[in-house]
Image 1 (tube, rainbow, N blue to C red):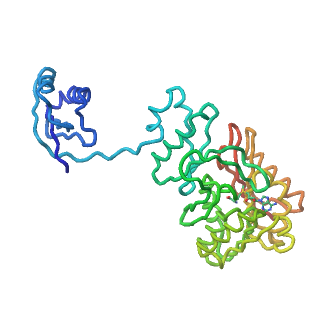
Image 2: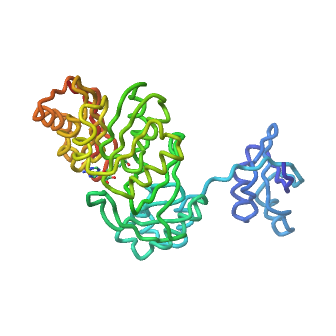
Image 3: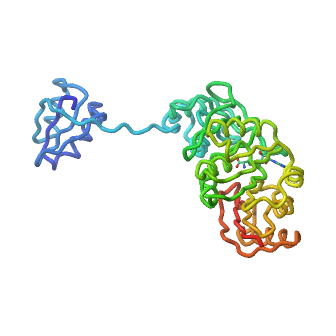
Length: 355
Ligand SMILES: C[S@@+](CC[C@H](N)C(=O)[O-])C[C@H]1O[C@@H](n2cnc3c(N)ncnc32)[C@H](O)[C@@H]1O
């Protein structure tokens, strides 16, 4: 325990004494105040000079200066806002983004338009507050296109979009500019993987870099996951991730359009079909039905819903689409919101047992 100069006062003078040493800039905030019987020991940054001593005498009816061993205070982790407090006008501080996606050593933020002129300052504050982060990217467009990608702008740190991300004991090589990846779905990746049983076959129609396929392989020895994606960059990262996670025995990466791949290779094979393409998953329910075994299985369907009853709406949409494909929903096993994607808009998941 470090030794420091101590102002010892009776407990009833404690508050007054702490305020006084703080005003005099003498309060050692790195050490913990200690209580010894009816006294408080307040750590000081230095011995009080005679003028300061006089102030103590004026304000405190009784006190003692001595040396004392104090335990250290745990340092509070500073937030980006702590670093920005002196850099930004107070009216803008409230708009500083608090939702940050950390993908390995890359931080991704959305800078509101009123803070556009301060984006580099915000990026630097983020680097200071999160020492493990090397790169800060600002979203500069919506997720779009068949590959579900968005543009980013480097606002601080090293110029790169490639990183390594760890989730539930799995390792992912990711390129946020070339293949879709969202850390916000981590509990879904894990939840779906936990639904799979030994011996089952899974078709992941929109597999990306493998965040559903790989945890399934990690949790189960005797499973087969056909992981399909149309984006060559996603499949090349998926193959790498299969290798680094030693999932070669269970995961079969397949490059191509899900409809074509299923019709050519995967008809009637699946106990589970994962459909994480929320914008257009409904258009692929026919493909999911074809991929399922003739006796049925489970579809894990993701959709976006804007309405007031998103779970009901998504369940009905999926049920109707399944009916149109000469299958039936035997049971809705689960319907829940995964995350809010915009005001009054949700990503939802429906697990449906299909006959
Ligand atoms: C929203 S991302 C999800 C990726 C991954 N499942 C995840 O959770 O990170 C959707 C993926 O579907 C792929 N995709 C879009 N249309 C496709 C199609 N017709 N066939 C196969 N993959 C497709 C995109 O390239 C993208 O990687």
